[in-house]
Length: 320
Ligand SMILES: [Zn+2]
Ligand SMILES: [Zn+2]
Image (tube, rainbow, N blue to C red):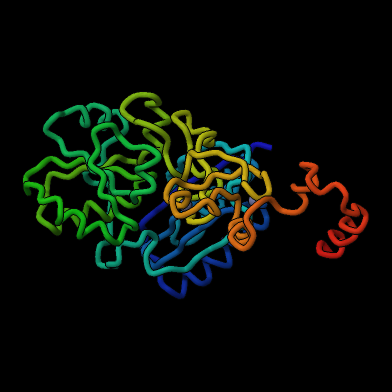
């Protein structure tokens, strides 16, 4: 089955009492339309990625727009053949994207560049293009001439900008996955004295809808089971998540304990052979007793003399 995936955010004032009620309203609607995904709610607005059957997702978003305090939502859409989320969750937080300062409150869409405007602007050799995302996201792909900040989380953005020592009158072009981080990043840049700052409206996802295989290099990391989307916004065939540290990895191997497909990252493999495994569980068992699990040993014929019936009954017992 193909899952329709829709992302949207909106900065809109919501009272804290209202967020609690809204959480229930959203949960009811999600149940009605069999929607999965994550919605982050705060007194500053809503930030979300949801998935389901296309017609259902569209109806769900229509009804969400009619809820008090929400209104029109700009969406970014894509498809996934694997289920991007297993359940639906509304999380109540202090910010819908966390820079660690609720005073930075975006209003309106000043200094936004459409994908067409962006496509022209980033080819200006005098512009500084800044990727506001985390290091493991830029590793998967970025704009060809972008400066990476190497941050672990968005809260490190203000300090990372100070460290760049840019000229205050520099023309700065910023982007992120869907645009929401840049909404706050631009305010932080203004606070640090930069006035000539622009952001890519709708982020990488909107850009790739219009300009696949142009200025973007690689794939775009996403925070769901797809791990990344390619230039055509289709789920990545290249990346998986390392089951030991959670970072994206394009190393595909068979687990040295159970033979299942595994995508451990280079950093974890460098920590030891035991991480050439598909899970924390297999890594643990490999450390205790290097080699294949008992079932694999049987399959490879090394211990055929063992009583198979006995093992099968043991397996049955552990499963129940
Ligand atoms: Zn790892
Ligand atoms: Zn395994």
